Image (cartoon, rainbow, N blue to C red; front, side):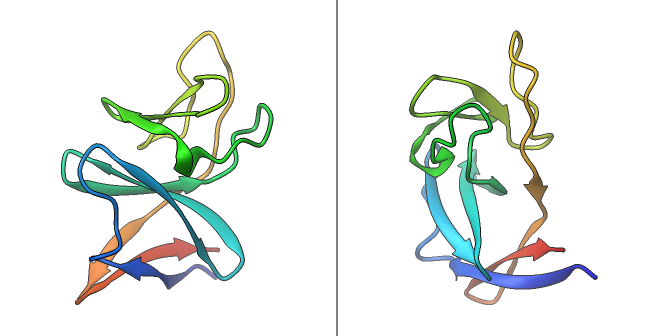
Length: 103
């Protein structure tokens, strides 16, 4: 059953246009701020397991810091020609906390 888990405080969350690495219950998460909206996805790029949270935000995508694969923050799907996908997690704020929904 899915549950909401604290990822970080809103004060620790990345500023617009930035991403960060975080962990919730042993799950590595890339938290990105796309134009003021927080998005969360699996932190590990499926290509070479690069940490997506160390990447950059371009448009609605997080770009892998190692090989520039760009993953859409809403779908988790990489821009063509790659055919990779990462898990996307629902995000919400509750008071001063940023929560992600984990299975």
